[in-house]
Figure (cartoon, rainbow, N blue to C red):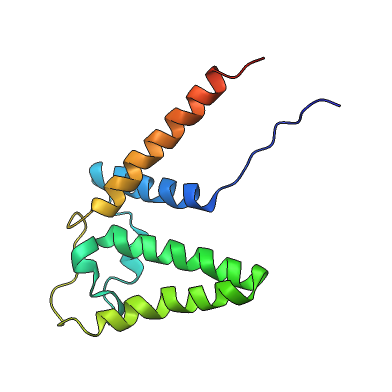
Amino acid sequence: MGKENKIHFSPLALILFWLAIEYVAFLLGYNFFLGNLLIDTGWTRWSHYTGVGGISLWILISCLFLYLALFRKWPYTVVFAIVIVGPILYSYTLPSEPVAEPGNGEWVARTAAWVSVLVLLSAVIKVLTRKK
């Protein structure tokens, strides 16, 4: 039997690519952010520092740990609770000042975009330099 080509799925890569897509959409003038779903709530006052991309990252990481908690149980349930409750509690310790605007503090999305480019380049180089 020959060696099968399998596609390996990485949740971290999915998160990085999603944030990169949001950043590219922002550069093109579209207001396409997952974080816009929670921008007007009191839960995300910390987004003043991270921008809307930080809220998107929080939602994506929360969904990842919810998935792990449902299918891999105990330790991930605790991590999921901390990931959800921690930032919400921190938000209520901050004064209720302006919330993040798209483009304000978007270092999260910019970093994800650059890391995504590096991941894609390394994958291309790996394919091109593979021994046959």
